[in-house]
Image (cartoon, rainbow, N blue to C red; front, side, top):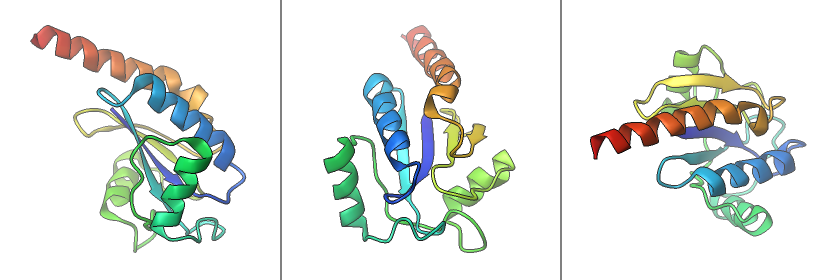
Length: 141
């Protein structure tokens, strides 16, 4: 189970989201769940640093333990293929930083939320997918 998020270091949503995302990663990851963070500078130029500086900031400031990918575009014609897929399958394209896409183990997008929706609000859906995954693995044993 993955929660794919376009992140930015200088956004008004940065502190709240990074703290909540790390808490989620700590509680559910890394065997059955991962936050996948994709820095993006498309909205308000709020991710101006290079990849190394972005990762250093997130790890130093929020003790982030989830994967941090290279900075990419997440919307428009130049969007990274992963975000094109997320946008096409969810019907929702990021319009700001900290859009969240919940992806099931089979690769299907099961939900998409803008930054005004907190991580806590979508936690029940994340927990349900993780629980389903754990039960399925248990049955396979």
